[in-house]
Image (cartoon, rainbow, N blue to C red):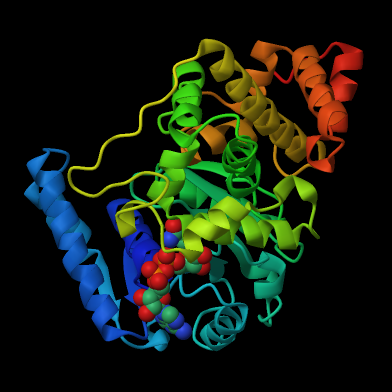
Length: 384
Ligand SMILES: NC(=O)c1ccc[n+]([C@@H]2O[C@H](COP(=O)([O-])OP(=O)(O)OC[C@H]3O[C@@H](n4cnc5c(N)ncnc54)[C@H](O)[C@@H]3O)[C@@H](O)[C@H]2O)c1
């Protein structure tokens, strides 16, 4: 099949590689010629590294590269069956590009956006045929991350949804279908991992290293929240939180943190700036955690139950199926277990008790227990 990619930056280049590896004929378009050239060069390097690691051979490298054409005119995406847009995160520009694209492609072409934060409904609204529009949300780096969220808008036809699920599955990705709501699955359900960790720090309960150590040791998370925020970039992570918070009409559960805002303002962005919650400069002394098992359990329980509550509420509001919510977190952000399976393991009763204790302590809306957990407790039910 023929796949068009609009935008040859980080995401567009990664998605092009995935589609070309799956033997699609790929056309990558960008308004910036230098970006197209950079994309071509970075693919060359990535594939050369894959040969070194013996993941692919020279024939495969050649096949992937010949599957991709870099084009300088949007018109050249005309023959595509599916077009995925990965340009700047601005609604007006995405709408403008989509309505121009519709002049060149056939009636049947599926037009998709890789947006992280805009509603698919608002992008689809720019099309004459909005039922062909859908969200296909890859994670960075697209070739490595198994998860792809597929987001039908209220305008999207069910045929387009099932066709996209089958195409993306054939690209060897795990698909999670999500409702067109802020943050889809991952960027919504993951918020407490950062937010509650930041709140624990702000209350003076523990420092960054101790919070990270607690979640890694007791939870089996590959990175602690502060290490992960430093990895993602404090500016990027803060913007996602603020966008989700605003989009949810300022639901206190998603309230951003001043600590993270100040770190961003100060330019302490994380690894990319050499300093974030940790110091990445040469010779910097590594912060050591306070290895107190009682404190660690308190930190871990609090973050875990907030994550479970978020996952349960996403299910309660039909954002996605239980399986898709769990797959999203294990395959999109490498959580050691799905949060709903984790809830079954620690017990629904325990979750409700923990959340009610937090609510009792703070009287803050962010600690309200999902009605689904309460119903399940009453009926003695489990998620799986
Ligand atoms: N970076 C991530 O981690 C990530 C993850 C998931 C989704 N996304 C989403 O993917 C999209 C792209 O993000 P990115 O990080 O790859 O951005 P990027 O800045 O790396 O790349 C964007 C590319 O789009 C090009 N572009 C801008 N306007 C254009 C236009 N009108 N027509 C054609 N090309 C145009 C730019 O020249 C640039 O090469 C955004 O919607 C973002 O929200 C990003």
